[in-house]
Length: 74
Image (cartoon, rainbow, N blue to C red; front, side):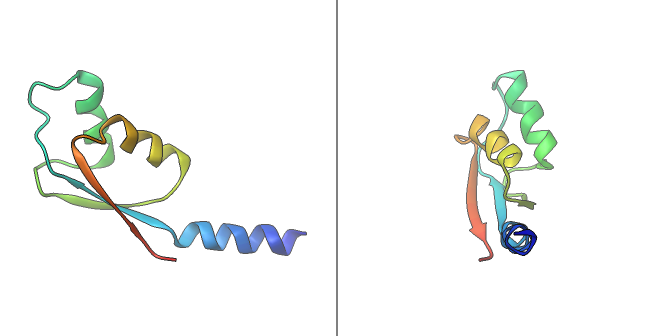
């Protein structure tokens, strides 16, 4: 049973999201500006690679109209 959990964690750890800021935060809600900043994005065209988990998916959902997301890994 523990082996299955370990395998699932390894599979989850391999999944990554490449998040790229494609639109400006000027004139956006404060929550959206702070979310973009928390993701580590500063300028249009900047990208970060983050682990694919529920927290990151939630943050991306808040600013989905400002970013482009690619899944990287298995």
